[in-house]
Amino acid sequence: MPEKKNDLIRIDGVSHTFTTDTGTLPVLEKLTLSVAENGFTAIVGPSGCGKSTVTRLVAGLLKPDAGSVWLQGQKVTSPRDIVGMAFQNPVLLEWRSILKNVMLPLEIVPNTLSPADREARARDLLKLVGLSGFEHKRPSELSGGMRQRASLCRALVHRPEVLILDEPFGALDAFTREDLWQTMHRLREEEPFTGVLITHDLREAIFLADEVIVLSGRPATVQYRQTLTQSGPRSLDQLYTPEATETLNILREQIKLARRDEEARS
Ligand SMILES: Nc1ncnc2c1ncn2[C@@H]1O[C@H](COP(=O)(O)OP(=O)(O)OP(=O)(O)O)[C@@H](O)[C@H]1O
Ligand SMILES: [Mg+2]
Picture 1 (cartoon, helix red, strand yellow):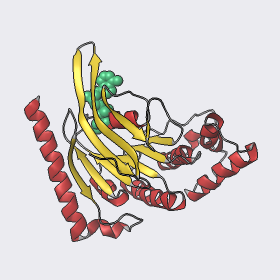
Picture 2 (cartoon, rainbow, N blue to C red):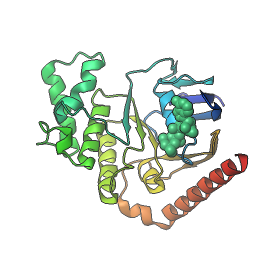
Picture 3 (cartoon, rainbow, N blue to C red):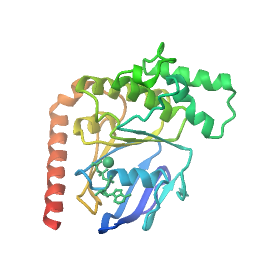
């Protein structure tokens, strides 16, 4: 597949096998996909098919056995600071305040900001996600949803080009999750980034992304790809239109197929 000019993330024919004490486990098989600059792609697929492995490859935390991963036209060989990540478990440091947790990447990633500018940057983001007034609280003093908001701020504080989200809202209740979906759209409008979202929630995928990719069962490859008609912010009502329902049904069917194929292979 020829590389398109505006592909910010490109995974090119990637295969990967894990070797453990008990044998080898092929996880990815000639996986090829790309995300355009400022695009937002959701990746869904059966549990254990290799989704988090894909995020680790893009983040440069894992080297593929075969094929290559490219960010901004440069081959990924080690972690790059143009990537921000947020996970299901926010892993905030309990001995630091929320503000100091959010500022952490600015202490690690090279930048020219003064201490005052770093703090202002962190405060601005916390305000954007509705956490003004909580800057000096410890992580354990916040609710799960608030911790996840802080974790998103931390992932974005150094203005990464790429934001990787690995089931960031999976542990939250439905209402908090919907609130955070809207926060995500707000963040993206304020500070455009190229996003990859791993999720098990198909509604979340079609609410946030502009493209949904269904991975096959292990070893995973792209099984199905659906471009969504909407790419910017949208209202929750739009999840209940006939068009959205049809898309959800197609995706659900594709996941079923992926799981069935995987079972047949094992
Ligand atoms: N470092 C590792 N060593 C050995 N096996 C691994 C390693 N990391 C992941 N695996 C295995 O590879 C497979 C894919 O793992 P991965 O975490 O990418 O799946 P996933 O699609 O993110 O799953 P889930 O939906 O449950 O989060 C799993 O069977 C997992 O046990
Ligand atoms: Mg995972």
